[in-house]
Length: 160
Image 1 (cartoon, helix red, strand yellow):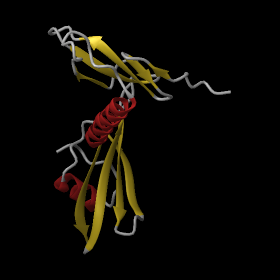
Image 2: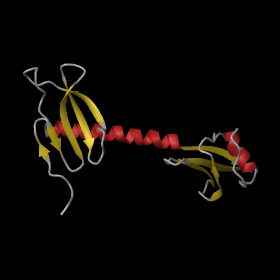
Image 3: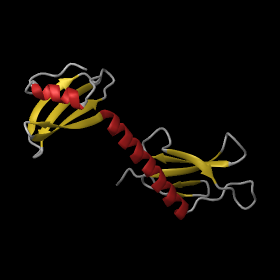
Image 4: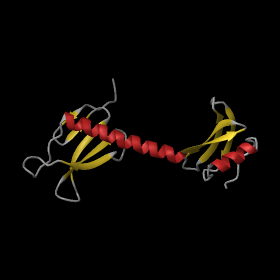
């Protein structure tokens, strides 16, 4: 027995095991909008305009093709949001150390009680050269990575 909801296929409400599309009155004008909600989330992943029906008063009914397109679009919105968040929390620079290519990566772990961050240096073979805790406010640049490498990866560098 699964906890997946039963599929719903109505003119203004369409649902599968992961997504629900709901056609709603657009509060900004006389038209209609569609909201895509990923099950388990409290806010829609996507809200966009919805096509008027033939009578120019009521919304066009949802159907399988429209629902699949909406799922694809909403999934892409979520993916881009995740990529943006990842980019905000993870940075890296490449430096050269004694003729070897070194990648220094900074990862921030958000937390309600206070974020933490760490630096990790690896060589071209993914071998760890050094690891250190830093402030989430630390600015990772080629210069700060080189300073940390010059210290032998012994201590976290001060923010430049």
